[in-house]
Length: 82
Image (cartoon, rainbow, N blue to C red):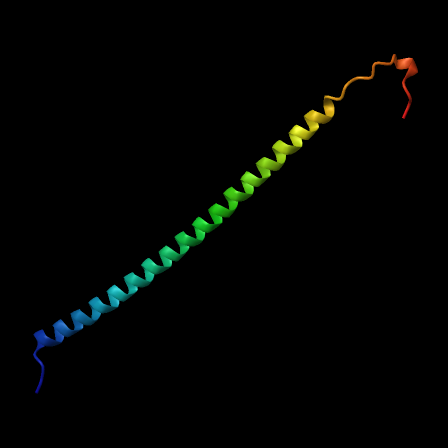
């Protein structure tokens, strides 16, 4: 038997709805994957910046410590020349 126009329209509508839902789910999954990727990159960047900051602070401390050597108590004329 032939289907009525209403039945064909309803079937077409439900098929279109399924396609739209599937496409929306795919977009949501892609968006979620991109957000996770960006979060991991941000975490790596922040970890690198923290490590760089720590190294810079240690270098500054070493430089400051190297500059605070005790001066020689000998007069300059009696100091050894290096």
